[in-house]
Image 1: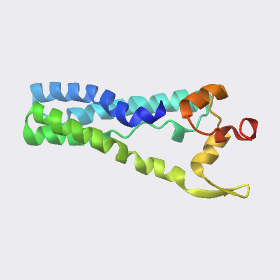
Image 2 (image 1 turned 180 degrees about the horizontal axis):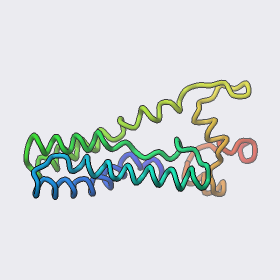
Image 3 (image 1 turned 30 degrees about the horizontal axis):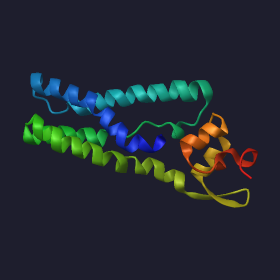
Image 4 (image 1 turned 180 degrees about the vertical axis):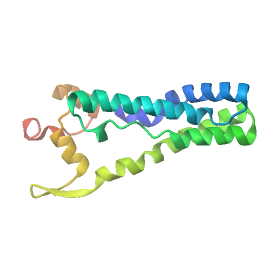
Length: 159
């Protein structure tokens, strides 16, 4: 489900930065391995988003932007630099990584909650975008995934 991205994404995404951080710290004693890895991941994600979503299908980028990972990586690197301990970094740095993940994405998502008047109705930008760019899939599948109303399909599905 889409609602699990807040819990699953930080857990999955911390593996590569932690591994790169451990290698760079062990061999060079440089405390920016996680940030370096995250910048590489974000570059690859933006290339993917641009060419695959916008380049081929003209799908709006603000629907598929990558998660903001840099603040969590900086906290992970600062924790290792300040403590010098892998254990403290695993406990405190990983906790900071997970806790900062969701609030760091708020500034990008906040713009989509602005109210606008659209054909005489007051709606948010997210509702207008969801109404104009219909999600693929059958209504039954969408009902199972979304567990809510089907307002994005407009008059075709909802009364």
